Amino acid sequence: MTGAADEAQFVTLCLESEVFAVPVDFVREIIDYRTFFRIPEGPDYLLGLIDVRGRGTPVIDLRLKLGLPKVAPTPATRIMVMDVPLADRILSLGLVADRVQEVTSFSGSQIEGAPDVGVAWRSDYIAGVVRRDQGFVILLDLPTLLTVDEAVLESSAKAAA
Image 1 (cartoon, rainbow, N blue to C red):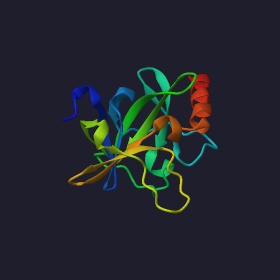
Image 2 (tube, rainbow, N blue to C red; image 1 turned 120 degrees about the vertical axis):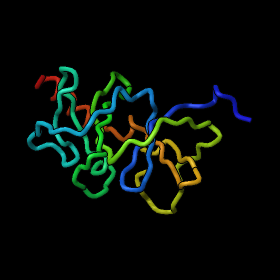
Image 3 (cartoon, rainbow, N blue to C red; image 1 turned 120 degrees about the horizontal axis):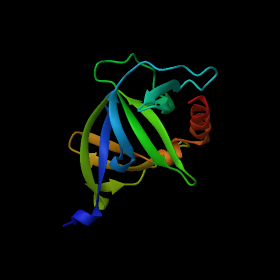
Image 4 (tube, one colour; image 1 turned 60 degrees about the vertical axis):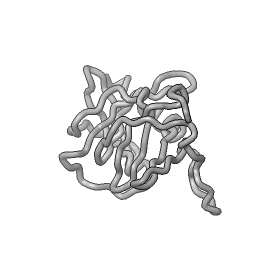
């Protein structure tokens, strides 16, 4: 039997019917969807800036970042305010999710590697996959998913604040 020390906690979120998870340690807070200040000439997945406790925070549409189609926000849409450790600093930003589901634990033995589909596709942002009765949960490697583009955007947000 796997011990509790081998477990890590994750926050699960949904984009359509797909379930993703991020380490709970990265999640500062989860807030209701709100309007934002648009940043001219930003990438399409950058929605803009919101004020989070007096700090300008860039907001990214996770659907667009992952290549999914844009949808209108619903009452269940949330912004996960994240503090993601990068090599040289902490990147603070908001990720928009269709809905946030739960906080759950996964043991190391439950986590499988990213699947090999036999063709070239960008899977470097997948930290692992967990099989559950309801389907799969994709564990996101946020430092890899959130590339230099977001680091530049955070610098712009600090300058604007």
